[in-house]
Length: 95
Image 1 (spheres, rainbow, N blue to C red):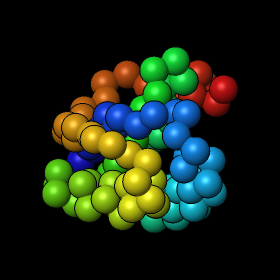
Image 2 (image 1 turned 45 degrees about the horizontal axis):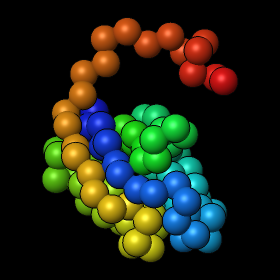
Image 3 (image 1 turned 180 degrees about the vertical axis):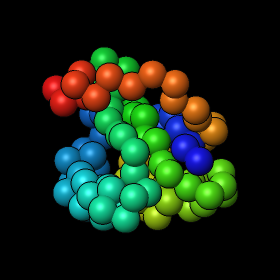
């Protein structure tokens, strides 16, 4: 099942640049394990969307809590929702 995490954080937090390499390494590892569907920040708002492949909401939250952006104090809060994608245009995701 897919779980979408809508995450709040402040883009101007100096910890973002400091922790970003570890965060991206972690997400790359999740992607390689088939646990990351898609992720990216909301540039104009701050915050981000991360969609996990997980067996339960609890597993998705464990993945989020293990993220260096969480353990490093970047992520302030989040909401996780089961997500059922209906339409996907993979060509547009390449930008």
